[in-house]
Length: 73
Image (tube, rainbow, N blue to C red; front, side, top):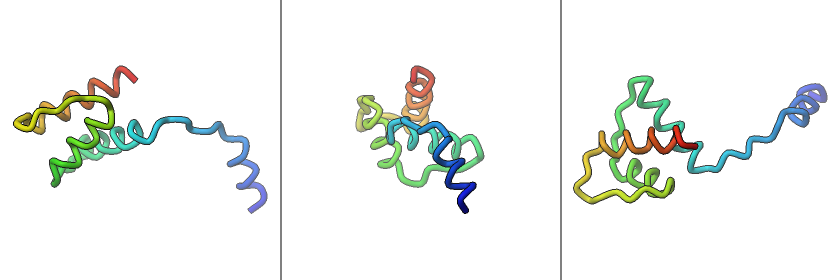
C-alpha cells in the first residue's frame, strides 16, 4: 500500500484538459469497433474542442474533425 502510494506520488501529473481526454476516449472507442449511439455526445465533444458543428453535419465528418483537432494538440 505504501509502495503504490509512493509510486503514484512519483508519477508525473497528467495535465491534459478534460475535453482532450474525452475526445481521445471517443476516438479510441471508435477505433476499437464501437459505434456512437448518441450524436449529441459527438457534437458536444466537438464543441468542447472549439469546433463549430452545423446542425446538418454528418457524424462521420464531425468525427474526422475531432481526429484532426486531436492531432493538432
